[in-house]
Amino acid sequence: MSMNLVQFQRGLSLPEFQRRFGTEPQCQAALEKARWPQGFRCPHCQHTACYRIGNRTHPLFQCTQCRK
Image (cartoon, rainbow, N blue to C red):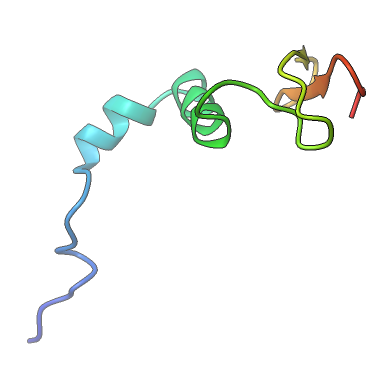
């Protein structure tokens, strides 16, 4: 039987993955950091401050300057 190359890829083990991203807040923080490594920046006007609208399934970020 041939070796399954996907199974033997280098990367995170399942326990390490769960330690880093196992909860919703951990996963959300990782996504925000990946999207904005130096903090929020509006893609429309480049402003750095935002409102975080949290009464949704996932938060919505709205620029305080242009409101996009």
